[in-house]
Image (cartoon, rainbow, N blue to C red):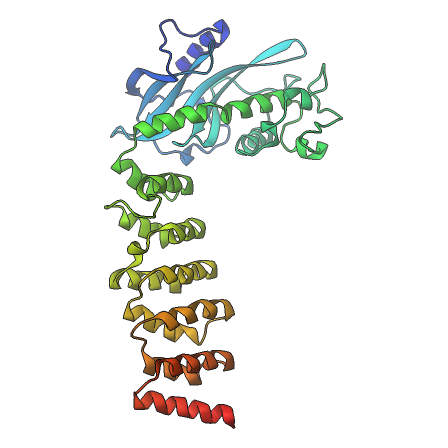
Length: 393
């Protein structure tokens, strides 16, 4: 990786593209080779956040007519993509002086920034040439990890008083940002460094990563993404295996059910809202859905009850709804009652038994529903008669 850093320094210093470079956005120029992770100074002490790579592919990225750089894709032993990284050289210039910054950035397969580390012997420094302290390195990670930073809309002249690298007393009126807020986005004495590095971490390279990852799109990658627990990977894969009508590509049904039953309530609710009713139709599917309901948080339960309006209900699920109705709160019962009113084959004896368990409002709803069904069962009639006597006392 130190060798790659020197190559980038040469490219950056000449300011020109490599001779013979093709004109499309990226080109795989180096093939697959062994991934060298030596000579790295892990100032954040978090190298374990990335899976172990054993190979890498190198892509030449043309940023503009004069700038080309190498983007690396780490692969596992089987040649499956793991993450992107780039060995960066960039000059940070202010007050007529430029200092070289060497740093390695890492992104996931969708271009989301993960972390950075440094080549050995290349610490980051501030304006006064003081080396970053551990707290500064941690602060830089916080800054770079914010995709919605104020730095996205600011110019460097908005942050720096001419002739210094101090924060400006005035603030760019376009952003409405306060001086206090700006201070949270940068490290004192390294404002330009923070600004420059953030722009690289969240710049046009993200689009190139998305394009490269798309070339790896296959069944294996989609299964990996769906089972990863990474919601960004999961949403990306969902867009590939679930069409605009919510139909699931055959072979991915188990992946989808695992996500719905997982810990991420937001993506679970998204799937339940978007998935085609056929995915939840049938005895086995609705038995699974009710298990999800009983184990889910309240917002997910409401989502499931709303979804049931679009699905032909099986007898077993109707019975579960009957049992749940008497103990449901106002919002839940308001969603369950229409389901029972429309349900064919309503278990009237089971429903009539709820007359003694439900509160007055729910009991009245149950009684009305029973009357509408005109039961002939003597047991049901008896329970209805007892209810009538009770409310007339």
